[in-house]
Image (cartoon, rainbow, N blue to C red):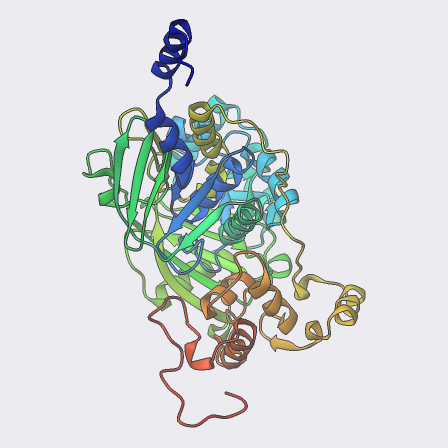
Length: 490
């Protein structure tokens, strides 16, 4: 055996001193580069943005489906910023319409620029909004008189002469945005781990974090928190208390483009706001942001004061959700704890997301010095809503697949073909609630009494399950408890 020369040994030893095998082994054995906690609107947005880079990404979501933080049917008002009190929040909103419009074209989700009116019961509120418009130089926002306002809506009252016209406002479907971004993320390699509850986050090395769930443990370099849980932070010291305001919503079978001419926001002297706007399927949505819970008659009377009287049978749904207006906080704890904490309890989330997502992405990419993924494609698979098609387009769809000629929900005009498509898509529906949210089915006057069993049957066939195994919205929510006897149909 030939002994190595002394100078070779010296060089070899120096080389070994510069290599940290533990760090090298740790990096190779990590499960992911980035773990995102929360598969809601914010989580899906961050996932889609980070998928542009050469990163191994996972999203952990405790619920059965993505985007369960987004309201089922609500169309959200996209403000021009005139009604935003905090200047920091307004700065995040600037330029949002242009960005959202571009994202909507490529992501194939519902967004429409729609002018609106702000009507005030008191001059004080009018003056305060006008001052913000002038100071911020918000384009397309100007005061108008009642005579001009009546051109846009015949229900303007003479006793409210303080009116502002907004050219650059719009409407968006938050759920549609979230599912679009979730699908794009999934198709670009992001791994979604559903129905996992995060139990702990631990910094186990200078560049390694361990995320423990009720099902498994994952290691990564960076965690992005988009869904709040006390266990994530270890304490509530970084958590702002959300101002939870009741938001009462009423869905009407009242064609917005025929009966109502423009979105309206009525600012009451008591401090609450009532709004009317179109939904993505052409109905009318009324929303009342108030500390006082109103009964059905009070809500109906409030809405009629804005759009005129309507019969009770035109009301499809009345719900109470939450209106949040907390400031947005992006906290960088990468050096200290290995995570970024995103607090975005704000009703204007869809408009705030482009800028906030950019901030989070910059922090993560800077930490990794990651290059762009050459295979990334920001495009959602095509889909369409049968109710929005012309007769010619409908015939073409039916010729392509006869299931588009089989109407399942006559109230919302949803076909079997649309339901099958919603199930087969990336991150597709696996429950009754998932089908309802993706297609808009069962929000009509019958509230699903006619179509629920038919949705159940389609889900059972597509998922290759027994009807009694189909879930409503979670693993403990079976629609059918048992079957007395086996039949060919439900």
